[in-house]
Image (cartoon, rainbow, N blue to C red; front, side, top):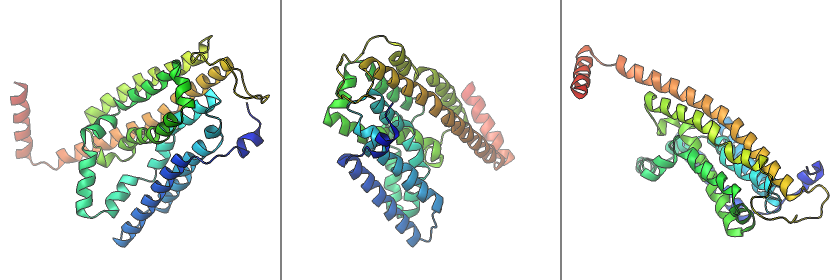
Length: 293
């Protein structure tokens, strides 16, 4: 593993990442300003979480040590991509950007936002039963020669820098911003069952990287003469260790959040039934019986 001074001092300018970070920071600041103009006070801790934890972690991963050495080290690249997919979106989501947009936008803007959230592509990718499969498909490429292309090709790196956090947000926001992605409690139950299955499946690429006795991307040369650089096989094994560990650990808070989401959805549905009159309940039962017949 690298010495601490190397980890602390390794920095680069990733223009794609900085443009994305800058644009996100400006849009959030404009949202805060517009919300304040409408008399909506936004919690300070959410603002700090968005900028310091969310955008801060994104900056460290893309411009710090993982970004600097992602081309040369498989494990640095794996650490970068897995955290961009699983951790950074959760930290950005603490700032509740969609809720802030609702507080800042005029009625016409909110209508457009609702239309964007209701788009079939957004609904599909934000589905907790579909989104993890996209992550599994991404990590499965680490078991092929494409692993080297993803690390070394500048275009692939730029696409991953932008696309992976966006995919992670679409996976995380339905759980954090549940008001904009409301599901029935029965549907959420199916999602929880699927996440338990996915908890086992998404560890497979990491396990295969760790236990395989040959270098799967077929790049047998070490791209540095630094003494702390691992050999190709050991580098691959470290990448598997990180991927395996991160995939398993991050699923736990997601499952906890989904159970909390299920509890709130169940209470919301119970209140909706309590608000019905006896006549409305009788009509609902008749409709159910007619549908079952």
